[in-house]
Each structure stands twice: as structure tokens, then as C-alpha cells.
Image 1 (cartoon, rainbow over the protein chains, first blue to last red):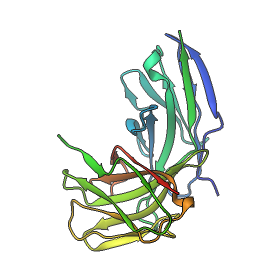
Image 2: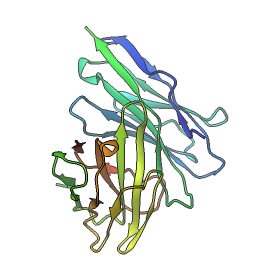
Image 3: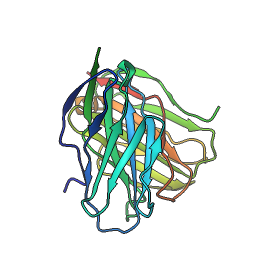
Length: 116
Length: 114
């Protein structure tokens, strides 16, 4: 079963506007971590933000914030004031203790295009 | 500078010719893993290692081998590559088992098997 679901294959946003990238997850473990990574066209994976399952507050890192709704099992990434350089693939991932050794499960990604 | 390095970055090879992709990290991380990334499938874990001499299969291990003789190195070995192993490969390392720890990714190796 898919553990991380990103329902938006592609998104467009105008420069300087905010955008929300959706992510839902599936786990029965009370302890887990949620991550967002950015992958520009050059291919590298860039860590953006982390949210722990026991964290009381939503994580923020500069223009990135994570809208964590635990009961709904949702961890949406919000990018404020989009910039042209934000155009990239974005992956949501979850890390949970498991027999397979703390694997990082990735969603299939959302392609974001920021237009002038 | 803390980093994960992979070599080579690009490789074109032929079916059946054994190859090794090296991975090294300088952060003294315990946990290392290999992923492959294919269009529409996201990243899938191939193998992982929780420490020296401790390795185990991920979700898609068929056709791959790994070893962890030293903490810093985690090579990926394709004994007999096939075209369906054409992919973008990432090595990653994490400090330890804590679920809050970020995974640091290498720059990726783009492999084409003809």
C-alpha cells in the first residue's frame, strides 16, 4: 500500500504568490518523521523541512512551512512568496521505525512551475 | 564540508558488464542507503545499512549487491546489469536511527544500461 500520497502531479503558481503542495501519509506507528525535499532539474535532492510526529507546532524554515494535521494524516508544504528558483520537483517522505530499518518512504512527487 | 559523494556521476554501460557505484560520507553517519529514482515512481530504497557489516534489503533489491566494510563507504554493485536498471541512483546517509534525522543525499548517478 502506498504510504505517502501526493495527489498533484503538477502545479503552477505565479511569482510572489503562496502555494500549497499536498501530502497525505499512512502509518500505524505513533513515532514517525515527515520530510520535504526539493529536486531541481539538476537532479540533487535538497532537504527543506522536517516535522516530527510528536511536535506540537508546525515546522517552519524561512519561506517553507509544513501544515501538519495529525488526525487527518496530512503534511502539506506551504511555500510563501514563490520565486522562479522554486520551480522543481517536490517530494514528501516519511521515516518510521520498521523492520526494514527506518526506511524513508517517498511520494511520487509534485512538479512545481513558478511563472513570472 | 559535510557531504555524501558518489562516483561516477554518469555511466553508460552494456548488459552484463559488472559495475560498481561508490558512495562515501564524511559525517560519521551510521545509517546509509541506496535509492533508485524512476519517472512516476518517486524514490525506492534498494538496500540499506545500519552500521558496519550490517546490510539489508529495501523494497527493490533484485539485481543489486552492497557491502559496508567501513563506516564511511557503501558501494552499490551491479553484477550483471540489465536495461531495466537504467535509472538515477542516490546514496544517502543519516546520523542514526532517530526518525527526526535528516537524510543527506549524494548528487546522484545517472546509469544507462544498453
